[in-house]
Length: 281
Image 1 (cartoon, rainbow, N blue to C red):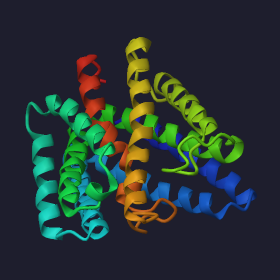
Image 2: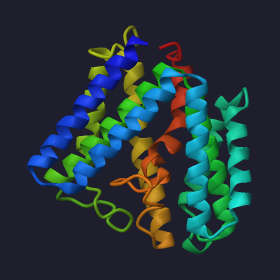
Image 3: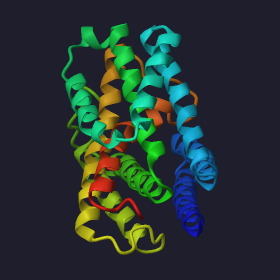
Image 4: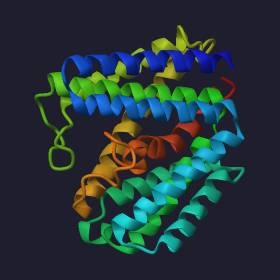
């Protein structure tokens, strides 16, 4: 588990640096986000130190809280939403679950095209609950190395997009869905994923012995899936007329706000991670 120590140290360093810069710049939102990330890092580390039960337990807890956010946002029955989410968890935990990744992505794509009047229904809430369960179940199926790579690359994409957009953002490309998203932010996110890959090969040793071409495929997928996950849930919030799904995580919103990219990105990542014979890393 030496890799966990290295991972925690590197991520902690990034969070502390970001928090220090925000403190100097008197940017309270970033300070709050950084402190919350420290708490998330601590919980994730505990889950991975006690893998696999710890990760399974964390995924189940995230699913349970996220499903309550779905029920509240759509005004749906918490019981039926939880049952639907449990079905999703069960499907994702099923042995040949790898092959559910493509149907999962197809359903997400189809959901993106639905008109607002359909998205706002309680029936859609049940479909979304299944998707949340499936996404988090795929995440819980990964080995420690896979979880670290997934979280590292998604977080680097997210962090660089956030700072790049705030510092250099000029060209808004999805203003009707997420006004803060800019072309410059997306480019910065791509750079962040590249930096995450470099860390994976260098200080962290997560990708030692893996061909760069294979890592590039996974990294590019996570850039696309991570951003689409964020936009997908942002569009849902627009349809519902809410800013965040909850205020559980200061500076980030709710579980669905913070883990949207994991929920959408995990199934395809799991598929690629194993098809490219990277599952042992």
